[in-house]
Length: 247
Image 1 (cartoon, one colour):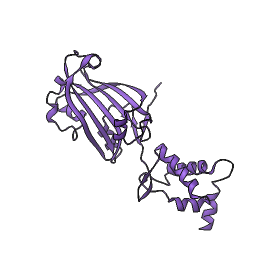
Image 2 (cartoon, rainbow, N blue to C red):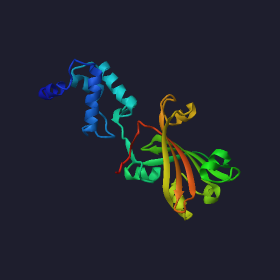
Image 3 (tube, rainbow, N blue to C red):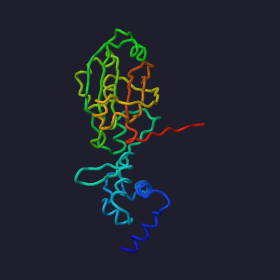
Image 4 (cartoon, rainbow, N blue to C red):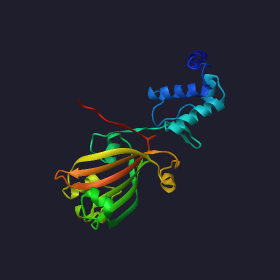
């Protein structure tokens, strides 16, 4: 045991703040898989004893990783390694499909579902008349019981005229489109940074000063019709995104 401790202590020196060094040691153990996603890391007492430092230093290091979203404190249980969900931005697919591919438990909470007049801005995007009726859906997307995205979705009413009768907390929009013979074929997506309102930030369990990724996406079917416009406010501390470049 003493030999193991001596070996571990060699990872810490005194040429930079100790808590920053411990932060990077813990980060490395997460990235190397020594601390797997979903598992608890050693307690503050154990880390302090292992590295020969005080608990306050350990707590500062852990707090820094909690703020980054790599760790999560669970009252009465400990500190757990968080799972980051990766999505390939070149693949056309919905939230549920992405979570299923990652073997994560997905869930949706519908906040608003209503019919409304499109208005000038949305009508221009959906290529319909401003007075046309659309569906507006606002929902929270959960992965392993944690809110990671808030979606606003705009759909032409005549595309899926009986949407109000479908349980959209059970079926994905891609599945519902198939019910009506609509085949999503391609999409145009932009990325920006945004901040949520105080009430929406509370729903996402984040501070309203924290920036989130805003993905705006216009989806077309194989007949070149615009079938959906969506805005996804996504927590950057919970997701990674990849893009492949081709020559």
